[in-house]
Length: 235
Image (cartoon, rainbow, N blue to C red; front, side, top):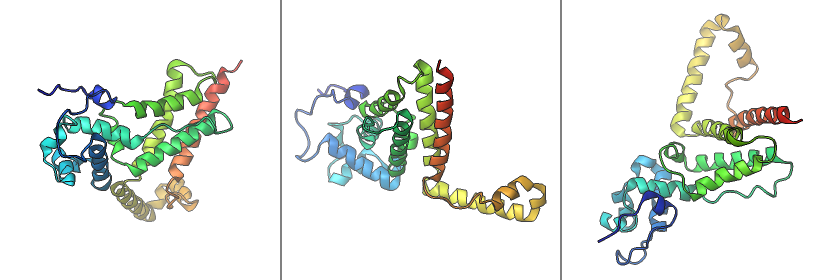
């Protein structure tokens, strides 16, 4: 009889290896990485135990010896895709450049694995994901913020990263371009009713930017706000 492994034990590497099982060459790491490749190429909905097993030419039952089901598989996919937390200790200049680098690397993760944007909200946190949170909190610690303020500041940065990364998805970009085109047509016909918008467009609003432009602008403003809060706490 096979002992059922909890999601936490599986995610934190505390499960037992199968004592007997499928053909040589199949492993939990290979299963997870194959699932990540499918999600990166086709989205999370394309991932199934059957589909992943088919990538190896094995039966679906072969996978169940390593991972109980799709939900547990996604737990592992998220933590593996995220990878180990960055070492921010060598970045000079204090907490601000450290957190800026943390945000940029987080943004790159969401760019490379867009399915993680929604998946992380519905799955338990693994060691890598908690490690990223630890790295950000550690970078900001010792500068006047404590407890909930410290955590909320980091979550505000993460929230800005998530908002910016959302617009990287091809479908969202297409919708955004269509929206901008529609706004342009409307303002061309009714510009006199919206003078502030017309002035902003004349000054360059809605023009295509560099891929990370929205991240950098919003990130700088969030960091500005955190800096104001820190200064307010200084004696």
